Length: 80
Image (cartoon, rainbow, N blue to C red; front, side):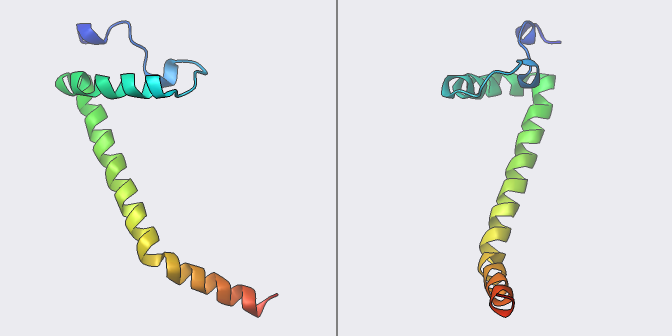
């Protein structure tokens, strides 16, 4: 483990703490430091993967949202 990462707990080991704005900002400030370490490389890869999935989900909802809504409306109209 890199010396700068010692003493820090991963988010899943922090117990039942709430995600407060200050905690989110602290985690965001840790990203550049983590990106320089090998452990941070996985974090960056996961962040890219999550952003890709979020973008794909947003695109799918925009592309198919009205069509699915219209389909549900037709179904509801057929079976009151």
